[in-house]
Image 1 (spheres, rainbow, N blue to C red):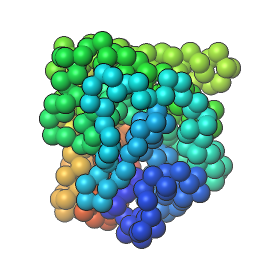
Image 2: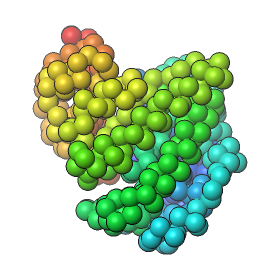
Image 3: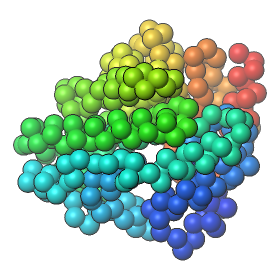
Image 4: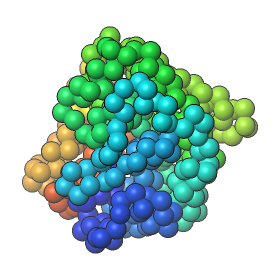
Length: 330
């Protein structure tokens, strides 16, 4: 739910004048943003490490900037398949992304077992869209053009991203992460056929390989969550993709999701973040209805996407309190 973010005045104050990715590369700052700010305000049931999905393209050698009022920007995006040769063939994840693992270890230590710590990564297709589009896009037409014009190169890039993500998530668990979430934030830009070819196989591969690596290393497996925003057309497939939890956005009816997933996975979600613009007493009613729809078994109450910068922290607190209140009643 984007626990640490611009909706918190203390977050804005601590981030003032500082480069976003430099903050991501500073373990002590990530620890503070993960722990002290959200958990000081709200009785949350878990913490998610402060980082960004675009550290992976950076590890592959691409420049990524966080431009105020614009968002993530790639000054030199991938334009054609020949540009794939600019990417590092082999990424030393511990060297390139060690700051994330240090932040996880430090945060896990400071949590002192109060709540579990969640690590995360962007999914291959979502990362591919940013690397080709050069930032956010309402259509993802440049990235989708690759799928139709350069399918082999697209698969090459998706495989390369998958390999890095597997190592990245594995190292997060070694560092102390107790659950993992994979964000396929741009699933909704694909139709069922494209999703089945260019997204789903790589999502499955990530879950399978991470769990296998943990087992081979005699490490305990951790719950893995997949969130494919607007990917409701693939719900049955996601429920059989080796993840333990499927995150849902607000476009899916909870009861229908239960039926379609057949009890194979736990479900997470799915309150429309904009519901937090409602009066606080109304938020409680909306949350109650949501929880009744899902039921209290094998369910993680959450938003259906991240918080927005202009949201009132008191309304976020009302959401968290309502979840606790109405969960006890189910």
